[in-house]
Image 1 (cartoon, rainbow, N blue to C red):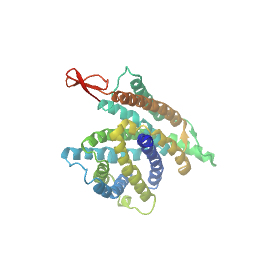
Image 2 (cartoon, helix red, strand yellow):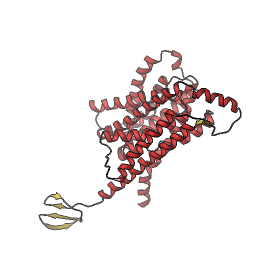
Image 3 (tube, helix red, strand yellow):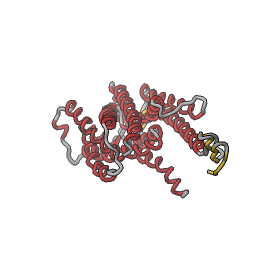
Image 4 (cartoon, rainbow, N blue to C red):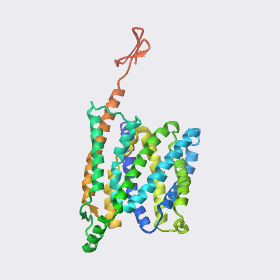
Length: 366
C-alpha cells in the first residue's frame, strides 16, 4: 500500500517531467523544418490532423460509457481551447522561434508558470494571502520570473558555444549578424504572446474539465477543432499550393512528432494532472525543457547561447522555484487541514475531536 501511495504521488511529477523531453525535441525538429521552408500555418493544421487521427479512435472506445453529454456551452469552451492553443499559441510560437532561436524559445517558456499563476489568481483558482510565507514566495517568485524574461528580451550580450567547433570566425560573424537582426525583439514579443495564450489555455482547460471530465475525448475534440480553425486561418494566410506539399522529410517528421507527442499525449496528460493538481503545477516544470533544448540546439542546429539568455534564464529559474516552493507549502498546509476530523453539534460541524455530538450527547465514535 505504501509503495502504491508513493507511485500515485509520483505520477504527476513523472508525467510533467517526461513531457519536457518531448517539448525539447519539438523545439529542434520544428525549427529545422521551418528553416527548410515548411509553412507554420500549414504545420499547425497537419500537426493536429495527425493527433486527431491517432487519438480520436481511442477516445471514442475508451471513454464511450463515461463521456458526458455535449452541450452548447461545453462546445464553445472547446472552440476557445482550440483557438488559444492550436491556432494562436502555436502560430505565434512558430513565428517567434524563426525570429529568435530554439534555445531562446525554450527559455522564454520559463515564464509560463508566472503568467499562469497570475491568471489563476485573477480567475480565483489560486489564493493569495500576504500574511502567509508561502503566498509571499509565490508572489515574489512571479515578479522575479517576469524580471528574468525582461532581461532575456532587452539584453543579448556575447555568445557562447556549448559544443566547441572549428570555424570560429564564421560563427562570430553569424552571431554578430544575428544580434543585429531587427526581428529579434519582434520575435520575443511573439513568444510572449504565445506563452500568454498557452497559460489561458490551461486556465480554460481546468474550467472545462469540471463540466466535461473526459480527458481523452477532450484532447481529441480540441485537436479536431484545431484542424478546423487552424485550416481556416491557413487557407487565408498561406496562398502557395506548394506549402501544403508533404513527403517523407522533415515536414512529415515535424507534423507527426509534434502531433502525437506534443498535442495528443501532452494534452491528455496535462488534462489529467490539471484536473487534480491545477494549472500552476502543470506549468512548473518548463525550465527542464530549456536545458534539454539548449544542448540539442547546439548539437543539431549549431546554435549559440547568448549571455543575456543565460542570465535571464538563471533569474527565471530562481523565481520559478520560489513559486513552486510556495505552492508546495500551501498544498501541505491544505492537506494537513483536511486531515482534521470534524464533529457535528446539533447538526452543525464543530471541532475535530473525532466524536459525533448530537444534541449534547456522544452516542457514537467516528
